Amino acid sequence: MAPVKLIYFDVTALGEPIRYILHYSDTEFEDERLTSEQFGPRKPTFPLGKLPVLELDGKTVHQSVAISRYLAKKAGLAGKDDWESLLCDIAVDSILDLKSAFSGFHYDNNEESKKTKKELALSTTIPYYLGKFEEILKENGGHFVNGQLTWADFWFAGLADYLNYMAGKDILADSPGLKALKTKVEELPAIKKYLANRPAVRF
Image 1 (cartoon, one colour):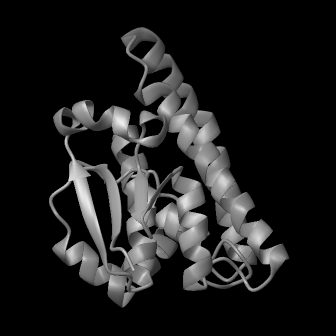
Image 2 (image 1 turned 180 degrees about the vertical axis):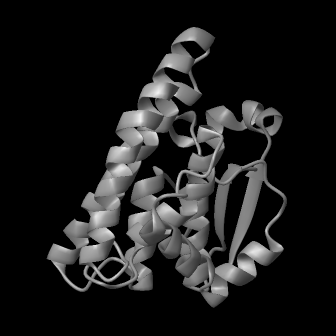
């Protein structure tokens, strides 16, 4: 079997949930981290010119959610049946909706509109999503889906530091359930070991 390789930037962001799932499943893989300068010349070699990509079995695949779902199924993290698999998809899509609220202001190059968007997102949109997520966790034993560890939990925990970076503060300060879930995932032996040895990252 060809070795597995994850190619992403030298940050957490969309690559971290995938790294979490790979480490949790005890999959041996190469974690190739590119700088922006290294990415430029190689961009045409990647599907759609974007990262992350996963190389496995001699093939190269892209799209972070699709990669995560595939790996989660192999790792037993995609729910026990089709219904729970659907709930995982819904949770991850909702987490990505939350991320979009951050990206909407963080990547705005106009400082005036960026400030306005950030204030609105931090006062309205983001607290709304965090509140809904807290309710979901209370109903599901501290997890996103039916009281069990799934890739949805990995996606939230893996993205949390990136969201904090974009917000410029701890967005989980008033979200005890989400904070506890992040800690729970990070304390899993395989994830804890990875984090202890993780290369220095900007966020």
